[in-house]
Image (cartoon, rainbow, N blue to C red; front, top):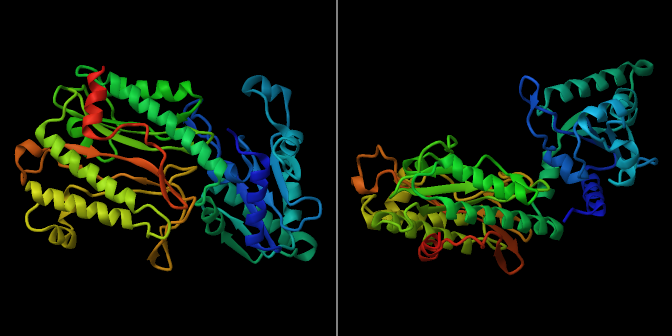
Length: 436
């Protein structure tokens, strides 16, 4: 399932061509972060470094040096050290960085202050993520100072350039290998959702459902793409609900928003279903509006359509539905013009998806919505959320929160729903729940 070293090499070459021969590109690994005291968070590599090298360790810096005679891709990383490995496990080391990860050259990270400044000297621009990690920023500035002091003043790059301007545009377009990983990630998340739906009965707690999601995800060698949202009843009206402590009650809807991350590639699925196994009249009426909005939005995910077209059609379907059901007064056109629909649908309809759940890439180009192209992947996730405190609507509607979300790839002749394995039609969901 892993992406081949040759693909990482192609990405590096493409990025260097875009940057030009007088540039140097520096990408630092994500630092290890402590949860508390001596307990570290599970390590996760910086997405940009992973995209360019697939290298999984902290304490590493990738330097791309277009035109360098002794090798353009240089990695600074940990050396093999028996004492360190006794406590923390085996390191990759400089030799394997070249042999297994396709680097042209590799040096110990402890030697970076002595070696990298000389590689930077004479280059016109430095592409980096300046401002992201203060420790790396300080180190980079110290290299610049050292160059100025050499031999009465070395040839120092004249400007720092935001690396994301070039790199993040590349990441928008997924290769066949990336899409294969994202399908696999989506399949794992789908299996986790199905398992959670089967055990979500009245009397259980949200955290028990979360535990089932995590069990299935980890059983496939994946990790959660983000902390799962498991929101019963009115908790579903909290957009980023995280507590996951409440008890599931008969008559509640349960909203689950959860995804898997496989080899750093994410999936993101939301489903909303009745704990009892059957939607109430009001729940089903709102659910059908959301489902129709999602279907209309997915139809807009195809080459040549603006990114925001899916949101615009979802807003119209939801506004029309809310007006027809009496939650909004007046016409859908009025609700869209004055923004009153946002009382019940305050979010956008989707985002880029890839190495990050909310993946990189501009949504607008030259002030206009970006046009979708083959290889892009988006989420489509309309919803209706009726706050329990909203006294402007009849009590029977209050506290209902619904979101339906799928991952959709743009392909040559339309789109591919990567997360199709999880049912979303109301009758299909009720049939699944009846089999519990």
